[in-house]
Length: 424
Image (cartoon, one colour):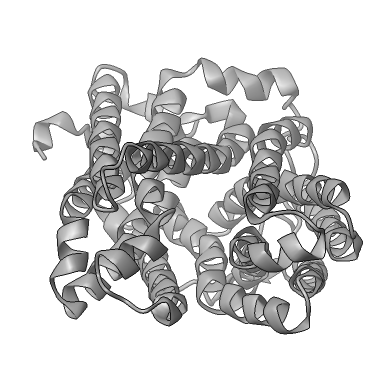
């Protein structure tokens, strides 16, 4: 990547990613807080959210039988949750921007606990759709507000690391929470995973109350001031990176099971282990994102997008070559996009200025739109008879487009004062 295209301000996080965070430091309030415990409490909420988001995909046959519908119709339950994320993130972030941030996190996670408990208690398709939509409403706002709180607990140079620690809960869910609750649902009934998630969410409420310090909201904020962030081109460019760049990953991952079985010759029984390996990659990527941010957020994002494009371009070949290359490709499919998420979250917090809460929450709405975009484009090429090597190739094109958006952002930033891309 030509260094001249990247502005000097992109290196402002040069010390980001330093290992640590366990020492007590002064929190936003008068009391001192233990950063490690605070981040653990916030990550626990991410674990609950990640588990409920992905466990439904593994339980579609059980859900279909339980509410007396077919499996394609049961897939709408996944869409209902995603719709809740897309709707809830901007609405809640805008309306709740003036509330104390710990208080808002408690409200969001309490609502999330109740909605998942309701998902476990309903017995009809219509009510399940409603419960899953409600469960998705807090998703984006929780991660957005939790990221702002986490970033406020550490020095400026370690913000990406702090955000990554919050998102680690989401990635660990794919290693532990999703496989275990999927098995629980297969054995004990599809309702039980949602009940377990409700319990974890209740524990998160207690942990946030105990370990996360008071953190005032923006007393001058309003829905209008939050929406003002959307007038900033850099906000839209960052959201564009997420929508297009992550669409490439989802175009591939949405069809990972038939890709591995038909191109790689993997037995169907091995797919849970393949997915667990993907979860390991997600965790590694999220936890090391802060180190990559040392070269600067925009630099880190462009390098990562280029690597994603290269991986997706050869993904089908790697899967069909040998067992080792197939597993390495899956691992990297987890690592590389997960490197991008914390940097993108921090970038949005930087460029949004007075609309940080809304912009940070919109990141997760954007990722759900990317999910829908990638899965749809992948299904288009499959319906055209192109075969399972093609979704990842479409994904490579999307990643290149995301790289182009990131470079546009870098060029625009070079033409504006460096302070425009940093928090006032």
